[in-house]
Amino acid sequence: MPRIVQKYGGTSVGDVERIKKVAERIKATRERSGSVVAVVSARAGVTNELLARARSVSEQPPRERELDQLLAVGEQETCALMAMALHGLGLEAVSYTGAQAGIRTDNVHTRAKIRMIDPAAIERDLAAGRVVIVAGFQGINDHGHTTTFGRGASDLSAIALAAALKADKCEIYTDVDGVYTADPRVVPDARKLDEIAYDEMLELASSGSKVMMSRSVELAKKYNVIFEVRSSFNYNPGTIVKEEVAYMEKVVVRGVAVDKDQAKVIVSNIPDKPGTAASVFRALADANVNVDMIVQNVGRGGVANLTFTVPQGDSHRAVETLQPVLAELGGGEVSIQDHIAKLSVVGVGMRSHSGVAATLFQTLAAAGINIEMISTSEIKISIVLDQLRADDAARLAHAAFHLDAAV
Image (tube, rainbow, N blue to C red; front, side):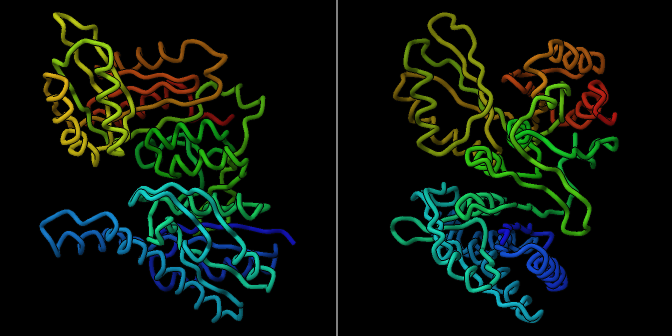
């Protein structure tokens, strides 16, 4: 009997009526395809509401362990309601927390990583003919404490369960029809892709595309979990995310992504000697600050400058982390520049085609858009620019690479 893992995002289960609609879709899948495991997010807005309550009870930032205890409630509410809705449709269903589903994590709170999954309990319920509903975004650590994976990480739960259960198919349901060449709200000519390679999807996700969490795509690639991104509000085909095949290289650029949740951290006048950069980035890593683009200038007069980008939510933690490090190094200042954005163009075809950087830079120069930082990989070019020009830059890049044209 085929085994299907489905994931439903917060807008898909936003209220009771939508939960009932999703239950009907799950029932149809169960009757058509066989065993179903559904991973659900918190209802849209619930996580933000819980965060606001946490901040309202104390002037101090909430401890991360207690924050995990609190935020896990949102997904648990949804999965229990979904199981009840399925009971109302005549299906045997059981709801699981992440811990009950056997999802074991490391000991980091609010951004835990999955270490392993023991699917024995889920296997027993599937063998008994039940539909299993799992609360996404959460697991349990070695101390028996609830952990969460970070905002938007129910995708990660679904991909990990699909791998552990050796599912025949994994479907990621959201409020969009699939993966587009750009954000349709910013670029009206954006086109939905029928399929995309893991590497392209990973780069788009890490560059600001909100469709999938990058960790989820990375895990899917590692375990070769082919998945489909599709809408829960219609029955249209979505976008298949899979291993790269030869014909994908014919398209030089596959998509454009913009990330406005960025801040630039400038570390200036630090000693220009071996080990300085290592000390800076070791401290940031230990503080779980995610660093993206890095530029170091040529040292002069025995001092140098480091500039790097981090998510806006990590910027103040980066400053607090680095101040004692700079004191230990013997000098330096650290500052934050907000109101920046990262624009990325992505495509596996960039490996075998030249001129992508030249086209991008010429296009932006003609529009008077200044580039502050540049970073490249084998299949991606990213730039930092003024946040106010980011949407214009996305539209210009999309047109310059003819992404509105059908392949």
